[in-house]
Length: 231
Image (cartoon, rainbow, N blue to C red; front, side, top):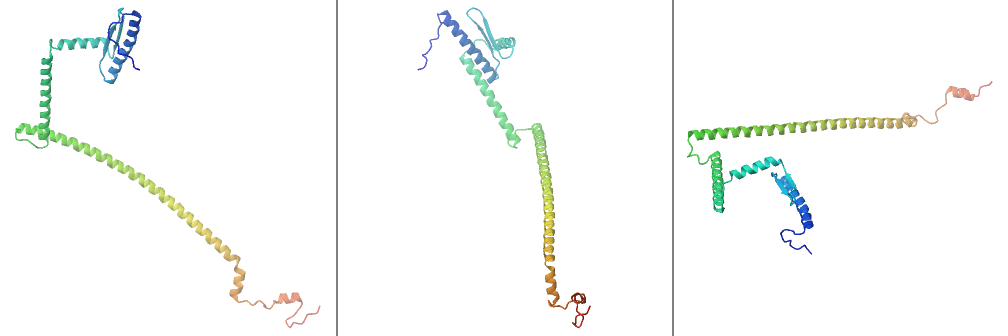
C-alpha cells in the first residue's frame, strides 16, 4: 500500500522537523543542480534553517545571480495585474505575426513574386541579395563537385592498382603454365626415347636372321666358305 497524503503544516516534534528538513533540503539542492544542468538555467538557491544556518547552491556565481535578480525586479513594472499581462502577451503575439508576414513577403520577392510595390532602390537591393545568394550557391556547388572529382580520382587510382596486381598475377600464371608445358614435353620426349631401339628396327626393316659379321665368324672359327679353319 502506498503512503498516505502528508498534511503540509509545521511539524511540532523538533526531532522529526530536523530530519524532514535535512531530507528535503538535500532533495531541493539536488533538483536545483539537475535543473541547471538539464535546462541550461542559471539557478541560485538560498535556504536558512530554523536555527539560522545557511545552505546555498548556485550554478554560476551567487552575487551575479542576486544582481541579475535585483535588476530584473527593478525593470518589472509594478502592479502588473492579469489584464496588463494579457495585453502584454497580445502585443508580443502581434509583433511575431508582423515578423512572420515580413518574412513571407521577403520570400515571395526572392522568388520573383509581388514586385510591383518595390521601387528602383528596393529592386536594386533585392538584386544584390540574389547575386550574393547565387555566388554562395555556386561556391558550395563547386566545392561539392571538386570533392566528388577528387573522390572519383582516388577510386580510379585504387582500381588501377588492382588491375596492375591482376595483370602481374596473370603473367605469373602464364609463366607457370608455360613451364608446366615444357616439363610435359620433356617427359613425353623421354618416354619416346626409351622405346626407340624396337621402333627403329621395325622402321629400317632389318631381318632378324641377318648374316653375322666376319669378326663374329672368326670368333666361331669359320671362313667365308663355311669350312672350319685349321689351327
